[in-house]
Image (cartoon, rainbow, N blue to C red; front, side, top):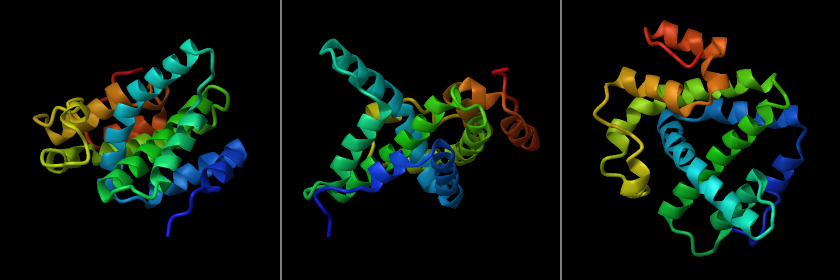
Length: 190
């Protein structure tokens, strides 16, 4: 049974930056590839959603952070009337928010770049699965799917994820470079 409120996000946000980074790393390490692929879709759609919400709040003279968005997404997940589709969608969106929060902390704590780079390797590795997952998927709208050119080869989808979607600081990290080199791929965001 769902509760009307949860301390899960607040506990996560209260972690030290290092413990938060380790939690995110462990979460993605244990995640299956199809879930990672859907988190990639959520992450690609998160950026315009977050920017729009941040802008709307700014116009009202209010601040809006990724932590605020995480709380809103959690509230959607805990809603009594959430459907199975909604639960999947908002779960993947929350995971995308967790990545975004880690990325926003990279500039303050450079040691987290390697953790984020490993996560992006996981996401890039799962990207080719979208060719089978997205065409008939009802969780994502056609507009949310259009970021992804499913006619690309598996290697090209993987490269696109690293070169276009991943933050530049992650794409140029040695972990990502080795991931790409081991697969005969290249990352040009140096």
